[in-house]
Amino acid sequence: MPMVDIRDVRKQYDDGFEALKGVSLSIEEGEILALLGPNGAGKTTLISAICGITRITDGSIAVGGHDVITDYRAARRLVGLVPQEINLEPFQKVADAVRFSRGLFGKRGDEALVERILRRLTLWDKRDSKVMELSGGMKRRVLIAKALAHEPRVLFLDEPTAGVDVELRRDMWETVRELQRDGVTIILTTHYIEEAEAMADRVGVINKGEILLVEDKTSLMARMGRKELTIDLVDPIDTLPEALSDYELRLTGDGKQIVYSYDTQADRTGIGRLMGLLAQSGCNVRDVHTAQNSLEDIFVGLVADQKKEATA
Ligand SMILES: Nc1ncnc2c1ncn2[C@@H]1O[C@H](COP(=O)(O)OP(=O)(O)OP(=O)(O)O)[C@@H](O)[C@H]1O
Image 1 (tube, rainbow, N blue to C red):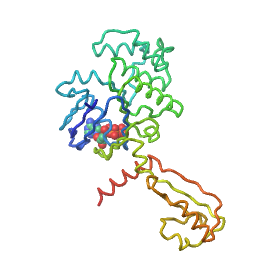
Image 2: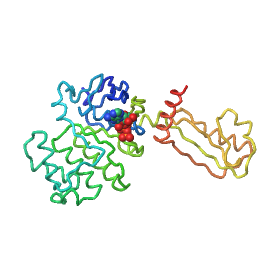
Image 3: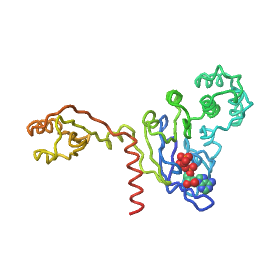
Image 4: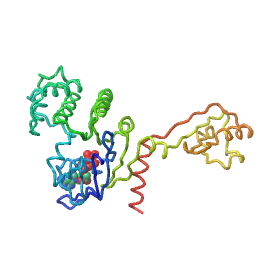
C-alpha cells in the first residue's frame, strides 16, 4: 500500500480557477519525493489537499490508507506539515513551541521525544530561547521540529530552504536525509533543482496543475541525460570535414570547436571513431571536454514543451 495515494485530484478555487487538473501520484513509505514546478504550478495546493487543509473538488487522496476527507483525523495524525511561511509565536520558547504542537494533536507530553527532536535539529542548546531570538535558519528548523512533534509518518516540506543561504541549505538537506533514515516519508516542494538533485529518490514535475512526469531521479537523469563532447581544434576550420557527415555535430567558437551531443545510454557513443576520423581529416585536436546536462536542462525542456503544445 502506498503511503500517500492521490487519484485524479481536481481542485477548482471559488473564483473558478482550476489549480489541479487531474493529478495522480503514489508515494511509497520511506521515500523522498521532490515536487518541482514553477510559481503557481499547484504545489502548495496539492500539499494542502493532502493535509486536508484545502478541500478537493474531485478525486481522492489517502494517507496510510485513510481517506483525507472521510477519515480526516486518522489521515491528519500521520502527516506533519512544514509550511512555506514562518508562522511562529515570537515570544514562545523553542521547547514550548514543540510541546504545544504535540498537544494540538491530543498527544500526551513526552519530554524524551521533545529532547530527541530538538537534538536531531540541533536546537537543543536553544530550547529555552524565545523564537524571536533565533536566526532565520533556526526558525526554519523550529518549524520542522513542530511538524515532527506528533510523530508523523509523512512529512511535507513546502519550500524548506527558500531564502536560506547555501551552507544552511546543505545542513537542511542532511537533516532531511536523517529523518528519512528514521523511516519518515518525505515530500518536498522546491524551486531549486539542485535541491531535488541532491535529495530526492524520485522527482515529480508539476506545471499548470498537471503532473508532467514522475520518475526515479537516477533513471530520469540517465534516460534524458545527454552528454556533450567539445573538441577544441588547434586551427580553425570553415566547414566540418566530409568524413564526419554521419555524426550530428556543431561547429562553434569561430571554427575552433566541434561539439558532439550524444546519448549516454547508447551502446556505442562513437567517440573513438570520431577522433580517428578527425585525425585522418587533418584536424589537430588541442583539448577535449565533456559536460552532462543537468536536471535543470531536463526540467526547463519539459516546461517549455508544455508551453509549445499549449500554443500549437
Ligand atoms: N485561494 C485561492 N483562490 C484562487 N486561486 C488560488 C488560490 N490559491 C492559489 N490559487 C492559484 O492556484 C495556482 C496554484 O497555486 P499554488 O500556490 O498551489 O502554486 P505553487 O506551485 O505552490 O506556487 P509557488 O511556487 O509560487 O508557491 C496559482 O495560479 C494561484 O494563483
